Length: 280
Image (cartoon, rainbow, N blue to C red):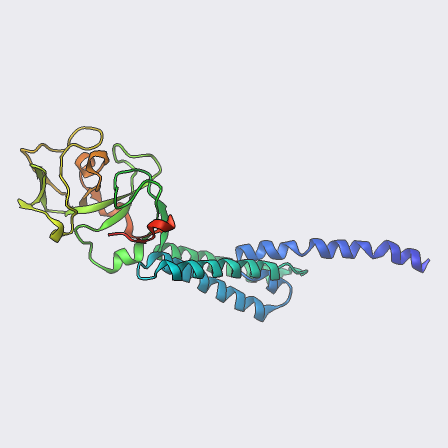
C-alpha cells in the first residue's frame, strides 16, 4: 500500500516543479531578476535588477555618444547581452507567487516602464527610409537620436534632426525623417545660381551647411518658391534640407517644419558597423 501511494504521488510534484520554473523566466523578461524574487532570493533579485537597468542605460549611452569607439561599444553591448541571458538562466527556478509578490511585481513593472520611457528620451533608434541624406546617411542606416541632448543645447544651423513626417507632402506614411536644419523662424531663404541664401547672405561650410549645388526643385511636387522669390520661415518652424538635393523631399516642398514635430538630434550611426560613428 505504501509503495503504491509513493508511486502514485511522486511524479505529480516533480512535474509541477518542472513546469513552475518557466514563469520565473517570463517574469524576469518583464522585470529583470523578478524570477529570483519569486523564488525567494530577494537580495539576488535586487542586484540583478539594478545591474541590468544600469547595463541598459550604458548600452543606450554607448549608442548615442560618438566619443565611444566601436572597439569599446561592441564588447559592452555583447557583455550586456550575455548578462541578460545569464539572468534569465538564473531565473529558471521553482517558486510561487502570492498577493504580496504580485503587488511588488506591479510596482516594479511600473518603475521599469518609466525608466524605459526615460531611456527613450536619452536615445532612440531610427532607420533611414530614403536616399535623401546621402552621403551623410544612406538608406537603411540605423541611427540613434536623442531628445534630451536636443533639449540641452541650442539648435544649430547644419544640425541633423529627426522629426515626424505626418502631414508633410511626399513622405512615406508612418516614417520618421532626418534632415539638416538650414534656416530658422523669421529668416528669409532663397536658392539662386546653385547657392543657398539666408537673409541675402550665401551660406557655406563655415555656416554649418555642406558644400552643395543647391536647386529649388524638390524630388517631387510643386516648388515652394521660385529663384526670383524668397520664403519667410514662419514662427515656430525651421527650414530643413536633405544633403542629396536631387533625391530629397524637404522644405523646398513642404515649407518649414514645426519645431514640435522634431524628436531630437541625430547623434550616431550604430549599424552597419562599417559606418559606425558620429553624424556630422
